[in-house]
Figure 1 (cartoon, rainbow, N blue to C red):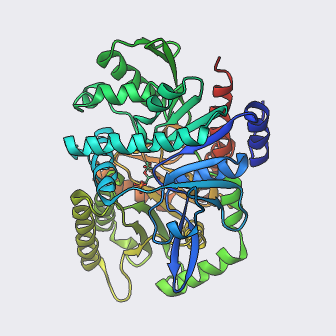
Figure 2 (figure 1 turned 180 degrees about the horizontal axis):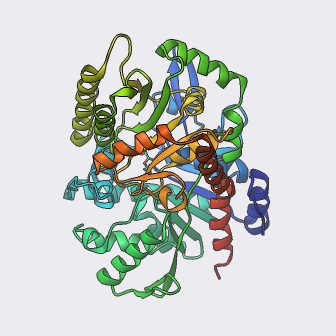
Length: 491
Ligand code: F6P
């Protein structure tokens, strides 16, 4: 058994077990986007922990990745089969783009995926919207993906690895057409309690879709259990809780947990690069920072991330311990997300108002407690922020994993940083040495910020060392290797 998985050992494993298979990854979000910059077309990595994580896997294994093309110049660079090799600097795998109409994007992505399934699976008191027309578009787009995957498989032996909740019907559609193809899916968000999922009017169709998988992965044991209970109550499938297996229409689906992670070594090395050290100097000068204690948070502007709660905790912290005014700053990197959805636009306004109010209340002279940086930011700037921060705050109300937490840990090569982490994230299951918080308990949250600031250096180092050793071992290559190893055991 290998101690630390790497790009090389993952490549060897994939070659040993699946060299005769065509590997196809399928997701909604594409890993690379092409845009016009002046008269030129430039390619850059898409924003998002999941695409970044899976890109590392695909660079190790090679293969084909099918995803929606949605950037301005995406159509310009593909060949007649809608394919382009990526990453741009060192092409290692093929990206095949699927084109959706505006109506399809509205019904499938902004609609059923992110107004029904997203709030349904995250317990954050945002009511899911179940619209029949959005559901119909979701079905149509899943069929479109199925057609594209099946075209690619042809007569070959294939392993199809599907990502996330946008494509819940795809596994069944593939299996129905090609029962011998190996199909696996990873559900990157939580699976809620059975009572919650049962409010979805199309729960049986969704479960039927997912039970087309040979292997279905979640981040945590709890998500697996919630899924098995949902299947047990909603269908006539046979559920074996002990083995975490479901038999439905004589087909078996195994359900396992695989906590996703990051490329630890790469992030750790990146934060020590000269360019990143230069970027730290530039950022500090631009933001007018000298030796303040720096807290950072990096989030998509999403109601699951607990951003207003974090701002209220900062406000409470400064109310209770005013001696920290002028000595502490909190940098909030905010990446606009899903802005066509009303609840996201409302959140943006709420966050903006709160930041202005808190800054006005506590500011003095040139100093203000909260600095907002609109994202997405370039990789070197993100690396610089993680590196220069003394504290990272992840305050999600509910989160499948949260890779920002793991990215921060991987960047602390000198062990000198503290992580405040919501106990409602998947990451909290592994990272007990973080300062765990309940983001809704604002007073305790504020006290944790104080605790982070006052923590003796030796304790800070000790806790970070332990967290780094966990993320180092349980890196992104191990996540993929565990999934491939489990698939290799299938009959
Ligand atoms: O974590 C769930 C997820 O859908 C990821 O797949 C993705 O990285 C993230 O949320 C961002 O979502 P979107 O693709 O809608 O920007």
